[in-house]
Amino acid sequence: MALTGVQIFKLLPKTNCKKCGFPTCLAFAMKLAQAGVDISACPDVSEEAKATLGAASAPPIRSFTLGTGDKAVKMGAETVMFRHEKKFVNPCAIAVNITDNLNEDELAHRAAEVAASEIDRVGQKLRVDAISIEYASGSSAKYEAAVKLIAAKAPDAAIILNCKDAGAAEAAVKAVAARKPLIYCATDGNAEAMANIAKANGCPLVACADGLEALSALSEKIKGLGVEDIVLDSGAKTAKEIVEHNTQIRRAALKKGFKPLGYPVINFVLRDDAIHEASIASVAIAKYSSIVVLSSISKWKDLVLFSLRQNLYTDPQVPMQVEQKTYEIGEPKADAPLMITTNFSLTYFIVSGEIENSKVPSRLAVMDCEGLSVLTAWAAGKFTASKIAQFIIESGVADKVSHKELILPGQVAILSGALEDKLEGWKITVGPREANAIPTFLKSRAS
Image 1: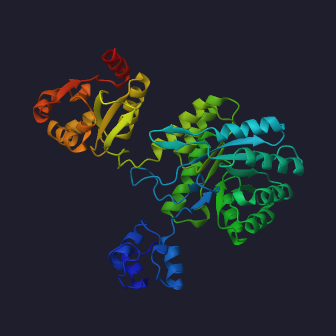
Image 2: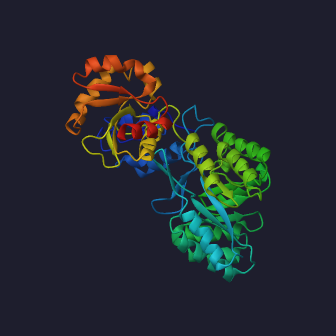
Image 3: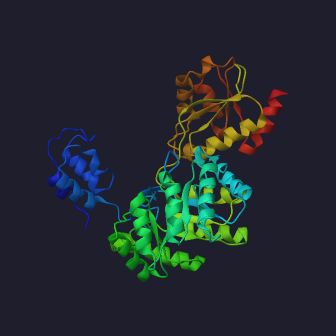
């Protein structure tokens, strides 16, 4: 059971040394009770208290890292059933399944697709995170060779060893042990052998059983064998099963504190039909899966799933924002157009993208409106003539341009008169209402 801030405070040194970054031990205790900080932030806490507090403050769903390096994926640590209650913490990892019975060229090509899957969307780098390598050949030597080849061709991707044969799995784990692969999977029949492999190599292990009762018994067995980092596979395959099983697992962990189900979840959604597969994957991403494994990837499928995942795992209470400043797009000279917008990420990236499409070098002044879009910021009194004028004056952009013309978003054309009064000596031009009209607008001015 979680401890209160006062209970935690009694176990702290009470020195108010500020080494943890908080002004007092009580403030640190309150933050720790809210799961907003880790006990390791206090350097002077006793080992006994650390053990007590570490267990009490541990998230109901165990957290660990899939893969290694800068592109490793954190999973687990979720604390809510619905994102509006707080937010979802660690985005679901997207993986592609590759069978080891393909030839070397096909294996290399599939791995290279994963390595090249990264895209930039609204300022975030999104990618296929992992490769599941399936033991389909029946040959331990061939499986080990495929694992080595794929690991070399996709050096940043996390690895899932999809192999229930303990002998073949052990050889493959040893070949890529430094990458900390996820071993899939332990069943009731091979749990001891798989747990020994995972424990010896410091790797996470998937517990695979049909149904939640069998799954919880298996996860307890695996933990008893010394493996702490566990992923759950309930055998759910259809959309209905995924929603039911994943919801029950999340609810048992969060609402009931049921430790045997307090682990991340993996769903294999392999389908021959790409649209069907993407649909099932979308259900799994939305309903609590920590790893979704696909049979194939393609640009359209990646974009759909990346966008869904990104939307679900942004904080609904904090708008995505970019830094307030004047951005130069396309090496603008002193006579280049100067446009203005708000710092809502989606607005910025759409507008800047259309400016790039125009091929007209320009400056884009981005004003801090607490992450609100143009119309919303105007309605909230954050994108007004006086505030825009103050921003333009303080930004120093006037020293970078040979003209004094500011292009205002067409949606707030009503501000143009007041803005000219506030910005003495400046000409205010009303630009397009919609971003997709920006290229034509800028080209017509340049011609």
